[in-house]
Length: 61
Length: 138
Image 1 (tube, rainbow over the protein chains, first blue to last red):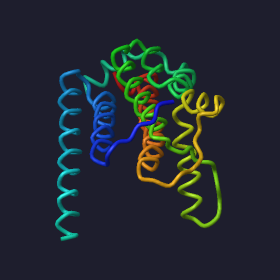
Image 2 (image 1 turned 60 degrees about the vertical axis):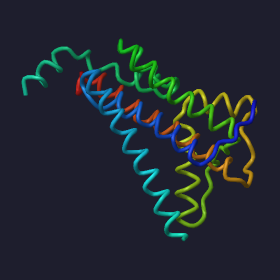
Image 3 (image 1 turned 180 degrees about the vertical axis):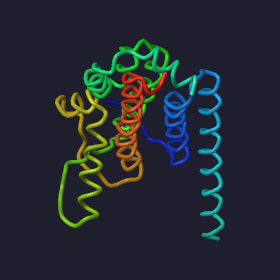
């Protein structure tokens, strides 16, 4: 089994991608709504990731 | 209201949901395939499988149920349930000896979380398959 080393950012982006796909697939009724919801979830994940990242960086000084 | 009535009319009989949910647990996305939603089933399968595979490649650890104080019980038993929810992926990993011992390091830690999260995403897929099978959802 090959070994993979991901940074925290890469791991979080991949997590956001897979979680968004699943949330999009299982929630809405039409494919267009599913796609829109999945993209929105992913955008929220990334925004939270960047926001919290900057908050921690600024908090540490 | 009219949409709900239409959904109930189009829904398959509710008696077959045990098999659908079991299959959805065993192979992520398979419940959707069985319910004739192949596109959604394929997306679920790909997401859960890739997340699980990445967790294994990052040398994540499989939780073993362990009791003690409340926090230990919640973390280890909850983690075990999360791992087990990946179905066949978890079973094959354990049976074929790919389960890793617990190691220190942040990448291993991400991997452990990916393995649990893959199972939890499969739980969402199982609930969706159940709702479709019982006619609560189109």
